[in-house]
Image: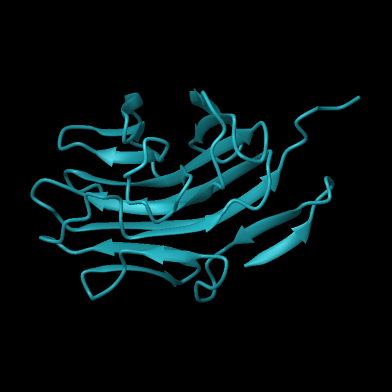
Length: 212
């Protein structure tokens, strides 16, 4: 985990998961042996055993969003693709809310028992997708624009880490905050085994005004 000064004066945060999770990470729903989220081999490994309900998007790891505007980016290295499983990026006003807030949004790689898809969802329902996109590894990115409390979130995905596809834009009616961001897995219905590995997580400052 490193903080590197960026051109904007804000530090670039990067975690390559080559050491134990420490501050500013917070874990949710990882107690006991049925749900785990721990670095292993340079990746953050999430696991949920069969019969263990992870339908509330946990285990989850989150941190407070340190600055805005920014890009939140992570690489999904592997995903077991069992039926009714998902893993993805989280953004919302409270990393511990467990999906209870209407502003909690989850950007997911999902196997819905028939197709491998991506989608953006929240407590308010399905916002975008499902779109068939089975390629893994996959890169996810959320661009947070506006005030430090949040005004506009733009969701992107990539299959090579360089070319990005715009997937969904969420304009907030009112500012919310402070924001938390992070990663999670989930399963539901008959709770099959679920495992996902994330290779890195980074937060990069964005010049909202552009050049000139």
